[in-house]
Length: 281
Length: 281
Image 1: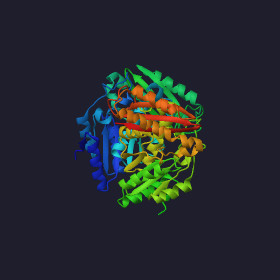
Image 2 (image 1 turned 90 degrees about the vertical axis):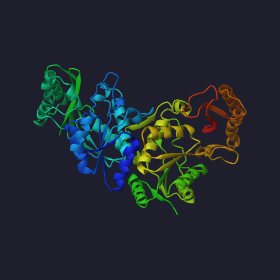
Image 3 (image 1 turned 60 degrees about the vertical axis):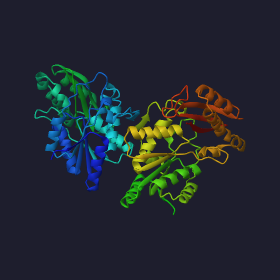
Image 4 (image 1 turned 90 degrees about the horizontal axis):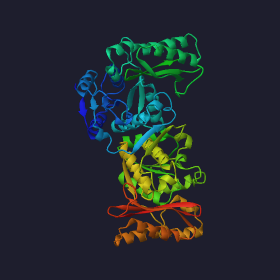
């Protein structure tokens, strides 16, 4: 069945209220649209945990920097709705910017977890993410909200925000969905030229390689990080934004792999910035 | 009936869930305890609007500056509970600091509305207030939350935060309750020496005097502000922290009283900082 399309907060709340009155649990999948199989998997996860799933589609201006791709970010609502129908999404919330931000003055920030990786490279990004996600959670009031593991830092920050602010929702982080050749699915993959697309899987390959080295016994984070940078630098047309081995929960740099770690990278292929990560047990 | 006393978030949530299952609407009155008749009036207002009222008592460390009165702020839980019983409060949530802040990294901030009056004089104060109020609202999930008009800037900031973040709660701002001689009730009044207490009503008298001048036709805000400062300076032992005429909704300074204004003051009597305000229609 085609999902309900809601453009206003009042419509979402009315639909959610009706579903709740019908004893359905509410799931929420916040997205910026331009949906790919990774997003659809998040909806499936939400649908396994709840009965009434709301997918939000909102290209949030406050999480883009002035020189980032807000204006050209793909907006493909009709195609998105068609795909959401395939996975039994019940409601699509696709608000206009004015519906979400009628001269908003309030911001939400998570300290420390935003100090590394994407944080310093995208000033204000996580503040924008936290603020919009909290708004969406307050609008939908879901029992469960699902985020993708590809955005590793975002997922950790949201989990922390929800815990710190006692937001009454369960956050589920679902595994990254990949193309057959290993490239992490991303709405930004469509920016890639055919040549860039052909090289892009080497990002994941590099992450897997250093994970294998760690599993084989290498515990020196600096050595692994250097190997990772070396592999990424070898990709034609690639420019490394960062490639770091960090503590999996605090996201702080670590010296020795004596606890769960995360290898996280951001790489420009041409003008397209791709992120990916892998956990090192 | 004596209210339930909850020390943990889990207890509050269980009690609220039971009340909701019983089709009761939930009210919330966030306080720092040391309750006076002003607080009890907030509970009465909540009780008129809802069936199950939760009063929170938490001296929130994050809203006090390093040189402020966090350590000596009065803590009178037993007396507070007795008084809350008089006004049919259903539940008292009195958490320990650790229950509210297990190493929290997340903060909420409202821009602009905190730039004047108490904001610059108490750096971080409103960030602390917003963060703890949002936490309490998320813990209690009330239909209605009631705040006092005496804390005029706080009330405006909370209304704004709730609107900006789409928090699903109705905020009610209840009028300031005063002693017979006009002094605004405050937990900090108990700090006053008998001499200071005798002079304290002159703060409200000064506010009333300039309100009357405005009603009589004076529209020049600078002239009113100067008269207000003059009256306050005449109080023996008083030190003016600020005494300002501002736009009632933006809290920005105004030149001409061509729209609703707020006269707001903070005055030290000895070491005790008292605030009060009056609206000028």
